[in-house]
Image 1 (tube, rainbow, N blue to C red):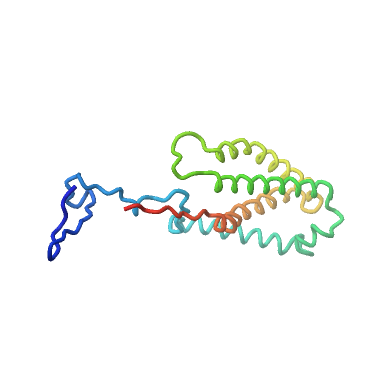
Image 2 (image 1 turned 60 degrees about the vertical axis):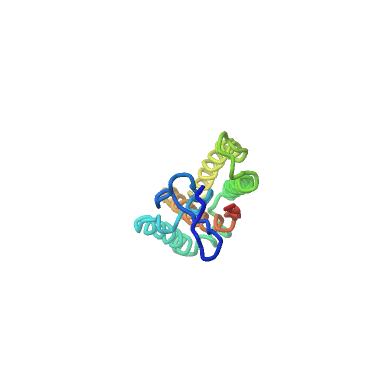
Length: 193
């Protein structure tokens, strides 16, 4: 390591050099401040204008569906009061969606509470849990889609399928922005330099 730079009087001041600025290689720093932090959220400037426009389109379509419903009353009123809806399949579909939400919440909590930043090799416990939960999530999602389609078919007939798909895509756009921001782990790693 180099001795430093003379500073008035009798002392020396240690200089920091990065590899690209004249360091001889014997005083390399670990470049801690410029490393990407683990679990850092994607930057907002990473989205293109087409992705943003698509997201706005999904949300606007879902708002249109919820507000206009069947042109006589909105979707919420229809779900609560319309006698054409098959109630048993609607309730079973809601239960399947609730089970999916519980699986997502449990795996998310497990991912942020158990994982360690310094584990580099092998699968972490939360990765194994989320991989084993994946078939259940897919199965409950498909079951709920079919149950909702069966329940709402008397009102919209063949338009039920694009209606449900549009509502699903709007949820996929909105939910990550609501939940992930609150559950994002605090990165309190201390620098030692």
